Image (tube, rainbow, N blue to C red; front, side, top):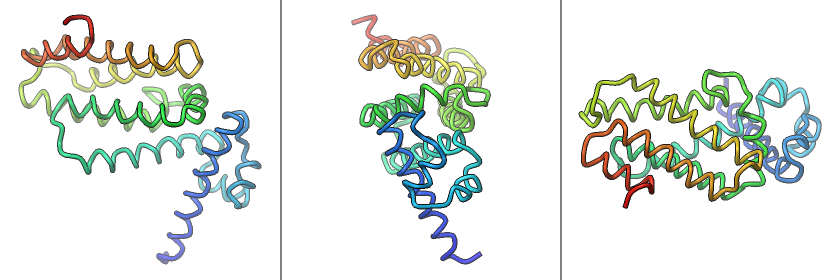
Length: 210
């Protein structure tokens, strides 16, 4: 398979994902149809089905591409160390969502129902794996007060966050409340597991103590 063909495929994929964001910003997820997307991206409808399967596949690819870029940016930064790596991940995700709420709000209002053990399909699985790897480093460094199932802990942290994100996506809560309640939830979970002085730091970050 030639490099030229691969470059054309990648360019087509980028064009489709760029068009996806534009259509969602214009008319929400309901405004995203395979026909409209093909027209906006300048490709055949058959090409979309071949590359993405269906509209849900396009949405998952769009979110996954955003996660790819985020991981590149995080990898380029100095190592934050266990636990802070998870905090930085969520902060970076929230910065992306806040920058384009007209795109991300309707996406998360629909993609939460995707198949997958954690919601969000394969994208959710990737985020959980990222958190799990960070928690495994924390456990290896002796940062937890007890031996724990880091996979279960990572799933709980992610699911708790997604529940709040879903409320924001459906306009049940505003962004500031999503942020404050998400920070509270994450830090209280961490405080229940971390040794001192990390436990005290997590409690201070939660806002429940001074």
